[in-house]
Length: 224
Image (cartoon, rainbow, N blue to C red):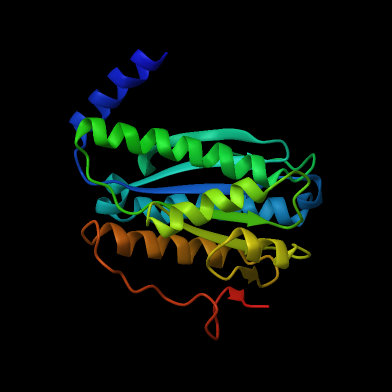
């Protein structure tokens, strides 16, 4: 299996040697997301892919992976936007945030190793987590892993709370202050995310890119 993945990676990068901008989505699909929340999340994902595809450079450089939790599942492995098929998510189960973060970071580390083996430059990866609840598993190790990665500039971790999310816990998980989504405005959130990734993908790895503040007046987020 590992040999097959290595061969696939060599072919993949030979066809597209552009620097990569990896974005890992950690998405809450626990039972409390049933109804309007999961429907809006699915619509937002579809629009996210469509907007990124409109930018020819971003389509070649941005890579997406999706890990859901409730239970934890790797729904989409890392790949460029043209290969990304937005999943139709269903809500069930608990909220194993700690396990989801650790699984996602392992996935990210494996992808970065593929970049290095193939000589592909890459931007600082984004890890973007959306949840509407509190962790139903142990998450302290995950918090330490996030802090370790942030300190070494190995990743940028963003936490977004929906509805009754435990913002205090998210504040301990994330070095950056967590944001609360206004209502169920997933469409606005994913529009901001696609615009931000498009801006990053047009820069050079290591450059500082100024992003629009999502908590500014008219933005999709607020700070508790």
